[in-house]
Length: 90
Image (cartoon, rainbow, N blue to C red; front, side, top):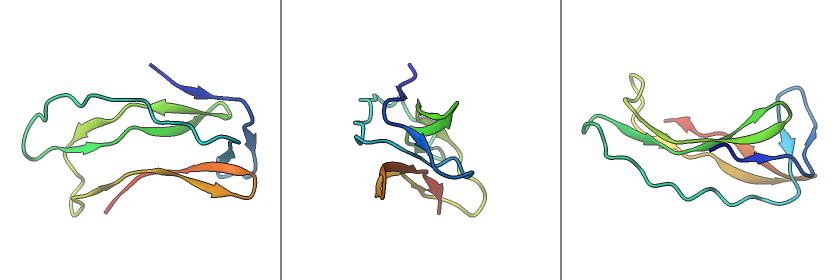
């Protein structure tokens, strides 16, 4: 189920950074069973879609070559509220 944050959102740059006034609480997620020991869980994230944040569910995946750890995305306090800093591989 998608979770959309529209109230208080405003575009501030061309890089798709959107500020929200209230930092939302992540949905509660039950992880499915790990498909294999090689799979790594990628946490769900907020992504920008049509000028608002939408929750994208987490999933199991095999890490890209040379990467082994998923660094979870998180909310950052900025000058106009909060914005989502996406997760990345390390």
